[in-house]
Amino acid sequence: MLIKLYNENPNPREIEKIVSVLRDGGTVIYPTDTLYAIGCDALNLRAVEKICELKGINPLKSNLSIICNDLSIISEYAKVDTPTFKLMKRNLPGPFTFILTATSSLPRIFKKRKTVGIRIPDNNIIREIVEKLGNPVLSTSVKDKNDEIEYTTNPELIHEKWEDFADIVIDGGPGGIEPSTVVDCTSGEPEITRQG
Figure 1 (tube, rainbow, N blue to C red):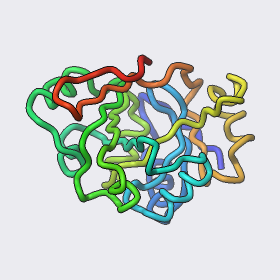
Figure 2: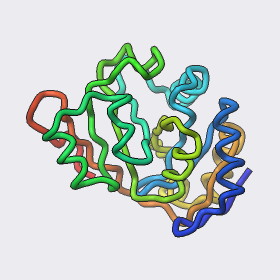
Figure 3: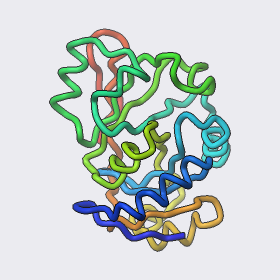
Figure 4: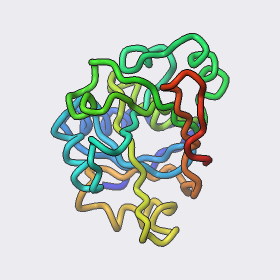
């Protein structure tokens, strides 16, 4: 299903429909402030495993990222010291993924890794979805290395490619081509490990 939403003013009824799909273990493709991403309720183990399998992600080797709607809930899922919190507060919402030490609130698929990526995109659509869901959303880009750029930026083409897997594709307008900047905050001094 393809649903059109506007970043400035996402339709609450459509948001509720998307949240209902996520609560039922469904998968959704959504816009962020960088790339289009595919995600699920990060606390639903089966849905997380389904996305990892689809994307060929080994949760033991790959960093998994979650989207939160604001800074207030991050401490439930990751350990954040004061300097890191201040750094995040200056840069979020925005095109950054902060790698932090995970807490035990995430499903065991995350616990096998000691870290989790935290994103708060500058995009009202996904932040409202997360707020209404009440849980973070697992996030991984729809981009594959073999994809033509149109299949990662054009919501209709994304829908065409992913409709058999994703329960909903959100058309939030054209997507970006640059991934988020990744900042590793697990070893004291923040380190940029990927420039977006």
